[in-house]
Length: 83
Length: 343
Image 1 (cartoon, one colour):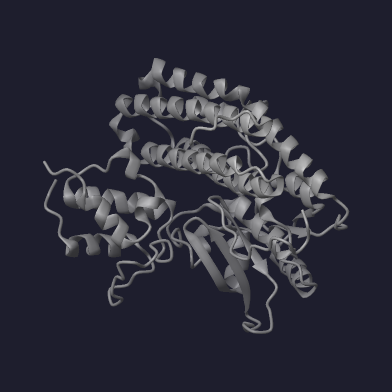
Image 2 (cartoon, chains in turn brown, cyan; image 1 turned 90 degrees about the vertical axis):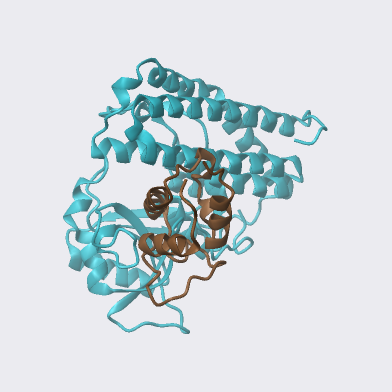
């Protein structure tokens, strides 16, 4: 897995979330659902994160709960073992 | 269920069918948690083209309309309008009478959808009567679209709505579906039954829970599907776009159903004063997450080929086992024979 940078993470969020424009700051505790995350965009976001960070999310992370807010998602990603 | 007793203005569900009926029931002052009075598997008797064995299994024996009628006395008027003009006249007349209207739309034309201008999908939304505080202009209608991932409550241009309702893509939705263009449902309150005693309501919940839990003997059908996948994984690694949508929808509908089951179990726990049903509700939520995970795994990892098919078969088997235990514990809760050890 590549080193995680928060700016890369934020950039992946902006790419996947339709209601998050370039000017709006990302609130770490905002609901990602309110920002347009749904079952389809979640899949796009997973693909984007896996591509950027050269990782594969474990099965248990593939639920909306993991993607509640940028903060919960960042925490989950940061806890993944590094190769 | 009593009128005005359990209003849930923010009701949402993981699928748009349950969400729209639940929002409408709540609007009419009924408790939408009754939509969770429904689980179990059966072999579909209608002829369906299929690519994966799970497509032969049905998970709905009753429609949301039937459930809302049984529990709340609500009735649903389905209308297929001849054209957009007639659909608009019908919607306006019902909004004027204070009735919300459920409408089928193509997400490609829905501005607040993540599918907007990207993908065509049949979807349902609620058009609700406006209140005095936030009335829009006459060129727009008030929309509520609360299901997982779309928490929209706002306005939509009238012309946009009518375009979304008349889209040709709605004429060719999922396998076996009818033409959804210019379709609406209006749910109406029947005669409210205020006479049901507490004891009668408790008995109603208990009997519904027992019926659902006993129907779960058919969970063997699910493990048989997993067996088919495991026996010949290479036969299932390639799906058409339609097949991908069908299989993913099957897992997604199960996730939604278990989440609704959890709501129903919580309502039953309160009505029957059976705290252990709260534990069974938590079990149902965990099952919902497992089906959601399986759906997402299927979508993201199927490209890995037979390894992924075998993993999906294992996930199905594991979840079916957990579902069997859930129903056994549920029956024990109802009989008062559940273990006193923390679950």
